[in-house]
Length: 160
Image (tube, rainbow, N blue to C red; front, side, top):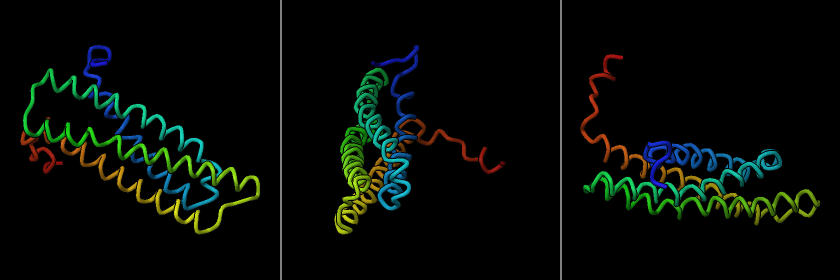
């Protein structure tokens, strides 16, 4: 899939990733730290994580198709290299959400895991969430620099 309704698919799909990675990460961390949030959000968090995992390779593939149409430059290569790593940051979000589902189900059966296990999962959620948000920022920043570079007129913003 290289286009959607005539537009480059990468440009459209990347917006989903830009929203879902930080949203999923934040909700995952909240669910790991706050049992009341976990009871209400863990299924939604897992759906968001699964959608993010499914769309990440589609976005990367669409980006590679877009790159072939645009041609390559060092900035685009940097962005593409960073983009290819994004899957390694979103899969852990899904795996940790699966662990939190186990915690949630055990809590519902009144057989909660030990505090140590819950704490370890919370630390994993925080680490994975921060890492995913950071990497999404790095990929997005490199992409915007590859596209816009020095073309942005900052004087427009200084007059606002």
